[in-house]
Image 1: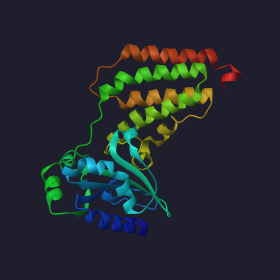
Image 2: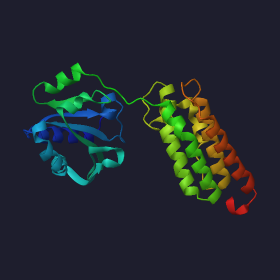
Image 3: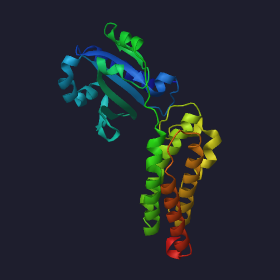
Image 4: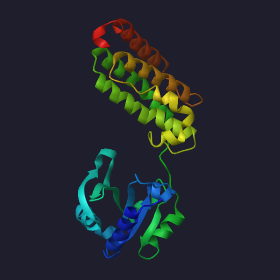
Length: 267
């Protein structure tokens, strides 16, 4: 359910973009596309432009974003591998807007079919009708090849007492491995840990056990639970298991726990 704040911003955006002759359309993805918006939803908007103006548009992204509303702050999305993206905060009523700039041909490669909020002519409709979205598939072997190295890394941090870094790495493993595998098993796209509370009710308790506090015992058990959950989730996957890496990393982790579990400085 869109709120007046969403509707007003979309109206302003359509008005601004439609007056720019370099622009071909304005699209919406994310929760708006799926009809799942609520009071906490951001807007995922896509500005489609004429390729002839690519350099100009990319240089003027911030100026264009300022034209859509009262822009409080914005930055580009290189940290998520998407330099075409501007992540924006508008006000005074706070509204998060992810604003992606793409030219027409780039629409052929997409992860979802966005809603067309406005288009100049029918070129966008034709592109969406003749091509299909494709979400990057999860690669089980990619995970297996890395997982036990990550476990060993976590064990070294446990041994040193560098628990903040260990907690961050366990979080990374949940976001990169457990969450996507659980989402796939429940029939959803592997988007990290997004909406696991909604889509993975059967696995919630198991996932909760992978969340540690800043405590030696808690971090060890959270990592062991992460390992146990991964071992269960990888069952049936067509992979070459890294059995020796698995054995060595787990034995190393357990040895660190045995050596230090009675040391009060680690608890």
